[in-house]
Image (cartoon, rainbow, N blue to C red; front, side, top):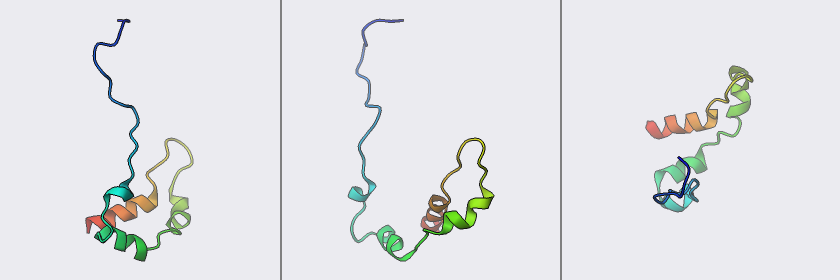
Length: 69
């Protein structure tokens, strides 16, 4: 039903920087400095389809596995 909004709506987008919330001496920052995953996309490009919805970034998947271990 159309009409005035009855209650406040939460913001659709939030400004958030993960780097601002991760401490300078945290383990994740050490991993990020040491592990270079810049070439992972080119090595795995053949395994990702170009049709349909884009898959999760392979670099992100590898980073999540590292953090999980």
